Length: 156
Image 1 (cartoon, one colour):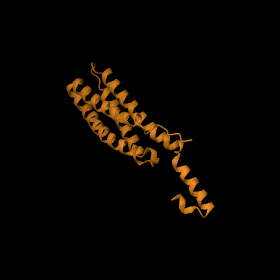
Image 2 (cartoon, one colour):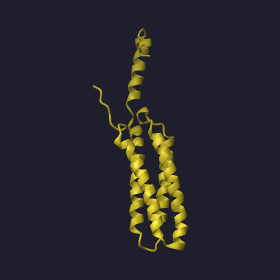
Image 3 (cartoon, helix red, strand yellow):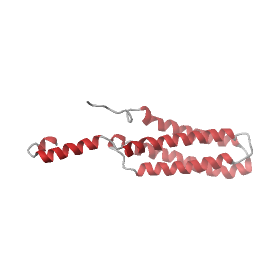
Image 4 (cartoon, one colour):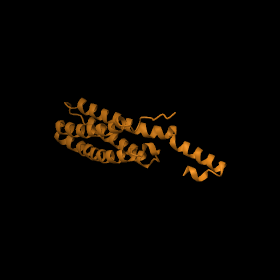
């Protein structure tokens, strides 16, 4: 494709500039690739902590906190899916789509447990269910951070 514009130097320079800009992601694109997974990991860690903190009490604070955090996680995931990612981060949309399914199940479970725990007061099932879903989301989101998706190749 670059050999096609050999005869016209102005068009070749414009094409080279466009290709250079495509190779370097903007700060917004890097932020949208890094911040949503970090927020989701942090929120799920808070959900696990609060669920474990209120395990032996009779309060329903834990399901309310997990429901509200799950709702914000859903919103962040939808924004991340709708964002036009840089080609370097093209798999981020797929990861967010998979975690969206897990978070949707987590949101439904948290919402249902608000009503169940008001009647039953059994936190063992709730803790196991929410902890498994939160840990599954955390482990699944660690995949892009451990792979070469975020390793910058410096070609000089």
